Image 1 (cartoon, rainbow, N blue to C red):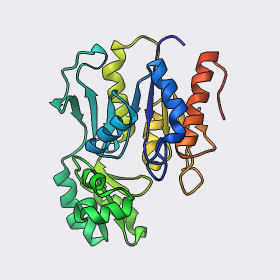
Image 2: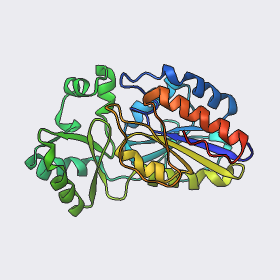
Image 3: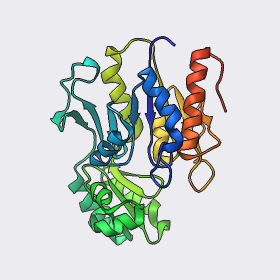
Length: 277
């Protein structure tokens, strides 16, 4: 396969199983590593969380955090010269979202009146209980920069809260476990397009992109890539999606991710035949 390939992936429910493991994805991860293909996490997780996961996964490629609120490119990655963004922790961090304090003010006002509570309202122990994360990792999940996961005791008010957020230049999306409050126009797809625009001129052409996800908040990511792959949600079934060329993987989590990636790589090697599961 000539040119370049980038693989963008959601984490929870996609590359990671419900217990946050990824053992079943080992064959595809090894093949990606062997081929030198950039594997770019695109997650609702914080920068601190994704940094830790990248170390576990052995990744050194760019990554996108907090539902597109920031793109992070390691300094000197593939020799690409970058002036955009701020130097932070060995990366160029390009922020796309609104300040966390602004999100918290909204949740403390209209959000609280509608019964919403976010990570900023909860302690580490509650976040650990709601996410299934160890306390140390729950503390990292609480260190938000430009997005806020939240929940309702009565989620029937979600549409009302989303309308109130829109009137204030904010937006609501939904991940696997939580709703997420972010800035209007901020999503995983916008971040993917921005990152590709920055690095594509420095990579061998043609550039092709694969994206994998399972949740509502992954749909903009899938819309921004050449080969979108939708995995079933942990509870079963697919989020509604009618993208052209969409591949639906039958299995969820790391096992489905592994199967889809290996199938797509083999199909790209073979030529233009459709690798649709």
